Each structure stands twice: as structure tokens, then as C-alpha cells.
Amino acid sequence: MSINTKLVDDLVANDISFVTTVPCKQLAGVIDEIEARPGVLHVPSNKEDEGMGLCAGAWMGGKRPAIIMQNTAIGVTINTLATLIQYYRMPLPMLISYRGELREPVACQVEMAVHTKALLAQMNIPTYHFHKQSDADEFDNILKYTFMCNKPVAILTDANFWGGYGDQ
Amino acid sequence: MIRSDILKDIAPILRDQLVVCNIGLPSQELHMIDDQPSTFYMLGTMGLSSSIGFGLALAQDKKVISIDGDGSVLTNFGTLPTIANNARDNYILLIIDNGSYGSTGDQPTYAGKKTSLAAVARACGCENVVEVAAEDTGKALQEAIKGNQMTIIVAKCKSGNIPVPVITMDPVVIRDRFMKTVRA
Image 1 (cartoon, rainbow over the protein chains, first blue to last red):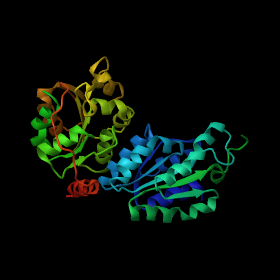
Image 2 (image 1 turned 45 degrees about the vertical axis):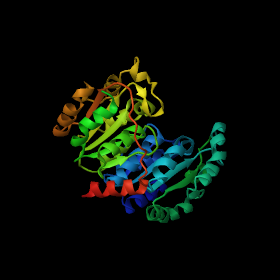
Image 3 (image 1 turned 90 degrees about the vertical axis):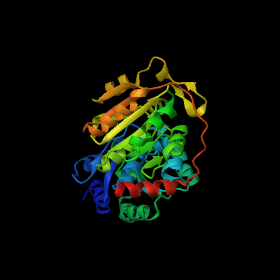
Image 4 (image 1 turned 180 degrees about the vertical axis):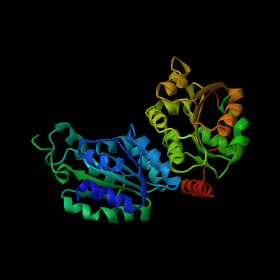
């Protein structure tokens, strides 16, 4: 089974039926997989804070949500995480492409990578880092944990997890 | 008419509807005029009333009205294409456009100058956009509720505020009673 299929199987098994995405090269396969699942409503966002607003509404409307985005989005969404998702106690799994880590070819991505975990820690957001594909064995438990505690939870997935960038 | 006059006018219409209300004075005014468990008051997060309401409309079938302001729409323009391209007929976006950032001291917005929010919404692909004078807001809203087509209403009014108390209700209480109303 491909890693994309495994991740989306876990989302579906946890009754997640609303997914919003802001794309990343690393996430292209998982986004395609979500688009292909009839039981999941996929609504692409133009910006990640908008996506979190959609997720908040979807959750209040009875659908379990998830957001898929790059780690650069942490810089965009601090206010939304604090004043909407955390303040109103809403669950939000955030499957995040962790750009700027080992095997990253684009230097500028490192500039947000070095802040990513510190920002998440400052926000008291439970954070998991997938570096090897076997790390995704925990994804199912992380999703259950997220909807148990009604918090935003970050799952950082780095280039090594996705198999690198080929020849780059 | 200023925003609070519009809210007083439409409060009886909003009573039976799911409402997501914009941060700051709009929420405080609506809370003071006619507090309802069917209203989700935003206590923070400027700009996301449209997105939260739209997510709610996507997830269930009841009508949802997002009350937004011109300043808040300007800060989250990106959501208009999302709304247009995933249109849901149970969604109404009511933009009360007073041409100013009311909650922060009535600084002018670009919507009060050259920028037309109705034209922007149409350019983003929204198909049923109406612009009305303040006094016609209730009529436009009732038509939108009766109709079966996603509607964007831009209600033009004067800037100005009335003294209102802040909302002291706990956010989790606001959210919990709102979700119970959604499920009822």
C-alpha cells in the first residue's frame, strides 16, 4: 500500500469527511488520494487561515475536519489557532509538509523550518514528526487523540518521510 | 442608517436561522439586541466569519447566514473564490458595508472608496450578488432565505457605532450551545 493510501485510509477510518488543502509538492499524492475518495469532501483553500475557518464551521456542522498544508502556514495561522481553534476548543488534525528539513533542496524553506517546532511548542500544540515511513503507524492513534482532546495537533512530515526529491 | 440599525431591523429575521457573526462590534451589537443560541459570536480571528459560515453550510443542510463587514471581507478576499467555486444554496453571506473599520475607530476602508465588494464577489465567480441600501437589507435577506440559491448581499450603510458591552460569555459556551442548535 502506498503511504498516501495509508494516510487517507486512516483519515477515513477516523470518520474524517471534510478536508481542506493548500498544496505542497510533497503533499501532491495525498491530495490526489483525498480528491479520489467519494466519502471525503475536499475543499481547497487559498490560504491556511481561511482553511481553518472552513474546518471550524464543518466541525460545528457535524463533520470531522482535517487540514493539509506546508509548515510555512504556521507563520500564517498563529492568530487563527489561538483565537478560533484553541479558544473555542476545536479538534483539528494538521497534516503538515515539513519543508526545510533533511534532503530539502530550497534554502529559503529552512528559514521557516527552524521556527516550526518552536512556534508549535510555544502554542502548546501537540506535535509529531514523521521522518521514516514506519512513523506513520502512529497516524491512526494521533487522529484518535486529536478528537479525544479537542485540540489542534500537528503532524510534521519531512522530505525523508516522503522519499526525498529525486535528483534535486 | 448605521450597522446597528440594520442589525435591529433584521434581528427578528435572524432569530430562526444559524448565524455566524463577525468579530467586534457587530457581534456585541447583535448579542445586545437579541442574543440567540443559534448565533456563533466571533470573539477573535478577524476575517473568518465568511469561511466559518461556509464550512458550516458545506457540512449540513440548514441555511447559514454569515454576517461580515467590509473590512473583514477585505482581509479575507481569498475565500470568495472558494465560496464561488464550491457554491452551496444553503449559504448566505451578508456583508454590512459601512466603508469603515468600525470596531477600531472608524478608519476608512477601500470598500468605501474605489473598491466595490459586489463587483469583487462577481469577479470571483459568485453568481447571485445583490447590493442594497441599508433600509432594504431585511427584504433582501428574506428573499435570500426564501430562495434556493446561494446569495451574497452587500448592504451599504453609514459608518458609526453605538455604545455596547463586550461579550463575556465563555467561547466554549458559545460554541456548545451553537452546536446543539445546529443538531436540533
